[in-house]
Structure formats: structure tokens, C-alpha cells
Image (cartoon, rainbow, N blue to C red; front, side):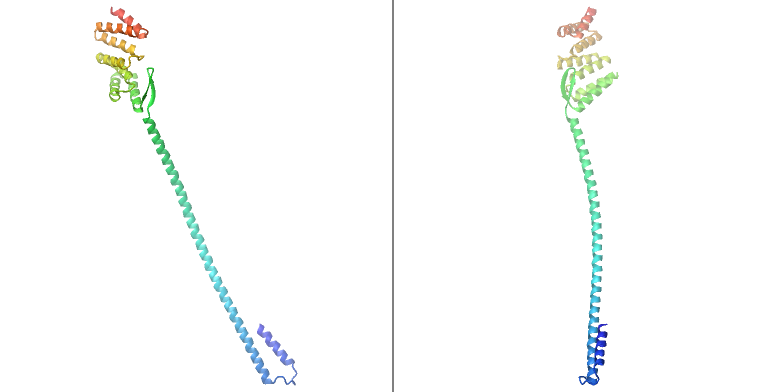
Length: 257
């Protein structure tokens, strides 16, 4: 477009010049026009080359930009995938931590329960307080349940087993007492006497001691040993004069005479 305007302007200038002017000859004018055309063409070619270069550079820039955008999108997708993986790992880690904490809590509770079972307990039997372990308490109470259910042979065996397992137990006097009563109920009077005497030896001040002495006398009566029974009853009234067993012994002694 620019070269066209240049040619028009040049032609107008040449045509407006007077024909009689001696400034230019026809040959010189043609050469000038040719030179001008060559310059205009050269400028056009140069301009076109620059435009093509600019277009190519712009195309290359656009292509590079597209590649950069694609790379950026790929990076974003990669980051999203990595973020999702990390979030999934964090969620799994949170679940794992929760599970570990639950297991630790359960384990701690289990240990606490086991330690609690191993801890000695304070119990009071026949007015006396002492310490026992869980198994000891459980076994004594189990034997006592058998006695209360009226199964006297089994109760005798249960108290006998208890005394073998826990010979130093604070329950020992009571175990002898209840085994003696179990044996009395099964008419095993001689062994019952040994149980009642063991209670008195272990705990002469036991609230059950007067009753144990009276039970010895009863066993002796069942064994037809009246002399021994009278002696036992007299000893009972002397050793425990204020007890209910002493009153019963006095009445029974009067019948024996």
C-alpha cells in the first residue's frame, strides 16, 4: 500500500513538470522511475519479510505459550493427584492413629483390669479385717455358696481344697468352721471336731469360737463320749461365760447329768 502511494506521487510530480524543462530527459525520468520502483519493491519485500518474521515469531510464541499452558495444566493435574494421594494418606494415617489409640486404650484397660485383679482386697470376716487376693476371695465365697445350697459333702471338699491352697489365708478360721459344720452334717464327727479345734487354735477370740466349742461337745455327744462332752461344756462356760453358746452349754449340761 505504501509503495503504491509513492509511485502515484512520483508520477504526479513528473507529469506536472513542464515538458520544456531541461531538468530531466526521458531516459533519466525512466531510470528515476525504475530506481524508485526498485526501492519501493525492496521496501515492500523487506516489509513483507518483517511481517512474515513477526508472524512466525508470534506463531512460535503462541506455540510456546500453548506448550507452556499444557505443561502447566499437566503440573496442576499432577499436583492435584499428589494432593489427593497425600490427603488419602493423611486420612489413612488418621484412621491408623485412631486404631492404635483404641488398641492402646484397650490394652491399658486390660492391664488395669489385670492389675486390679492382682491387687489385694480388704475384707472383714467375723469382725476381723484382713487382705486377700481376688482368687482367694472367689474360692472361699464359692465354697460358702455350696454350703448354703445344702450340698454338704461338696462343701466339705471345697473348704478342704481351699485350706490346702491357702493355708495362711485370713479366711482359714472361717473355712475350718464351715468345713466342720459340713462334716457334722454328713456325720463325720471326728473330722468335724478337728476343724472346730483348728478354728479355736487359730483364733481363740473369734466370735465363732464359743459356737465351735459347743459344736465340739455336740460331736462328742454324737460319738457317745459323754465324759468328754461334759468337760467340753464346762470349759465353754468358763472360757466364754457371757456368750449365747455358754447358755446353751449350761442347759445341755443339765440334761447330760
